[in-house]
Image 1: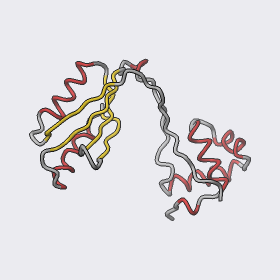
Image 2: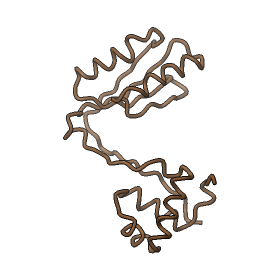
Image 3: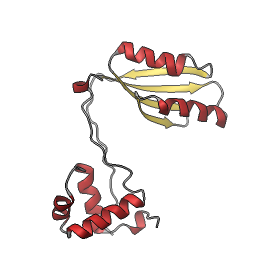
Image 4: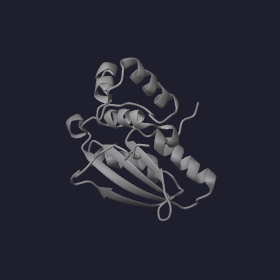
Amino acid sequence: MKQNANDIDTIDLRLLDVLQSDASLSNQDLAARVAVSPATCLRRVKRLVDAGIIERRVALLSPDKLGAGLSALLEVTLDRQGAEHLDAFEARAVQEAAVQQCWRVSPGPDFVLVVQVADMQAYHALTQRLLTQDANVRNIKAFFSVKRAKFDTRIGLPASP
């Protein structure tokens, strides 16, 4: 059964809110925070996962502490923008481990990539593999992070029904 935002009730919203802050909670702890039984909590979370509302649960790691301290935002413009060319570049970009996010955008560049690498040498190797060797890449504009002022994965939830 596919679920959408109209099918979400107040309990689902509370579950989603708590899970966005800490997805590592045990089912018992999550149920206690949302004030439902553990069985109800488990059933509802499974339903939210099955509906695709919860896409996945992950651990957020510290890039600096793991030696991946260089973050960059790349604007990539292709020479030819036919669907097959856009799809081909996108397929290559999403295969790169250093590419954390790949957005097809409009207007302006064709893609915006968020990349995380160890250092400038690793960035250069990535650009050689992904961008320089692709004859269809017309322009690349790179923005290097000097400070991460905010990083959040939370999505604003609709008001309770």
